[in-house]
Length: 419
Image 1 (cartoon, rainbow, N blue to C red):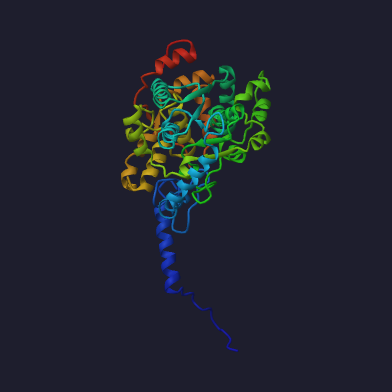
Image 2 (image 1 turned 180 degrees about the vertical axis):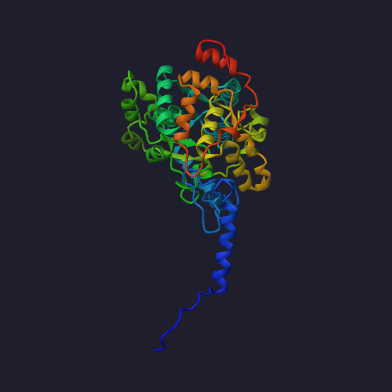
């Protein structure tokens, strides 16, 4: 046996050397000066929940979009959806329950089910408590022009206020009441009306490839509610966190007993898992045929003013995400356009500064919750996602106040907005 008298130098093969070089280049692209990794195709940072990057530096959401565009047989999916509808058509008080915020996605579901599939549907709405004028007008147009029946549940103001403060402190998100109420309401209506089909809108695969994707679909069930919706706080938890609130006061935010849903033989699906989603095109159709209108949204590039027009809190909530994760809704929406080919990564980068704004509505929201801005910032920064570090000096003042801010100040605070 030959004995070595000196160490042999390491010499990688050409393939290994090339792959190492490619991975180093990808890593250099993914790391910016702030030390945060980002997808090499879109702008999603590593601070996004459940994001992962493959060996080429591509995020799981971009990979999911590739599956959507290249692997899914949408004709077969639609045939599967039509078979689902036929199992329910004409057999119950309504063919389906539609969770209906009145935003572009739920409006598209209502439009599609009525105009394309000729279903009799019941729209089920959880009143988010901060609904904007244009949004209310959109709801009126959709309900009247489609000829739908419509039911709305509204929760107690004092209870909402307490849950907002508590979920802000515990999860860095004051919208727990709305996340839970929006999902619980249609299931309760389905149980009340004994209608075993609930049809949601945009699939979770569009935004988060970590939990669900286009191969597995997004099953809107009890597990989905606990995994993605309720911030890991159920109504019983909230009851233990806040004072002077009866468990019955939290009923709007609780799912019904799921054993009752199983007895009902509930089927709950996202339309976007069966019919390919295209939000810009869908907005154009809704606007042209039903008069659904966009509205200015704080901290959002004008290209996306059809997005999240429903709620006065939206700008403040998106600002909270910016503080915690270093990006917000403009980047999120631009990423969808990058994946669809409507924008290049370079074009999307020109929009980023819209996220770095302090919304004027924050003044009203903080007064409503009884939290001063120093405490708000302390709480928000305590929920920062590593390695992001918020830099207040880089935040600009709001573009301007929303037209309805004064009216919301009067309604929520009992007086004029002094900010």
